[in-house]
Image (cartoon, rainbow over the protein chains, first blue to last red):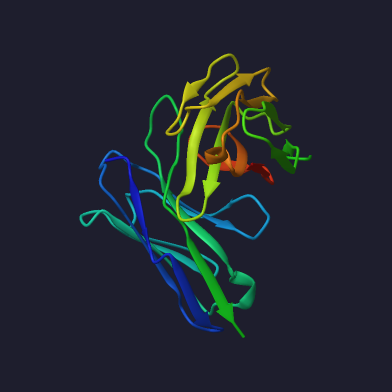
Length: 113
Length: 112
């Protein structure tokens, strides 16, 4: 019930394409869903996050779509660029005395010129 | 501000050796975390500290110990390293809700 399942494991797109990364969860107590971006040799960094009271959130070229009934959320990258090539992790957390994040297994995105 | 720093960046150990990974933050985080990252397995929580003076086990605590020395520092100790502990280790800090965590640059550990 604590798992977050992420797919695909890897993704290759051409510049300008719209890669989509999907995540699914079981625990309905989760109430915070962030996406982290990690470049090679670096630590992950927060990219964008959503709460379950909204169905979509946009920040620049990055959009999270959230489907509460299906317990799924996804990351869309509009007009993808070679500089977006990185590993992306979804995660989930719930309100409480601790703020642990449960991470998905990651998606390695490559954007070719 | 340096953010979250980790030392060392790289380390090679022989099976059975011990070592301590150091983490420090200057962002006044209440919470600190240790993760390991392995190919295809994402980030798995080893131990965390919700506040100074407290520590708790995460998903994969076996073979590790931690110390929250003060608010700034959170160390991870391997008492008797095993090849299965070959991994990249990340320290992170956070203020709690809304749960954004700030990661250090990582320590790449190889156990032979």
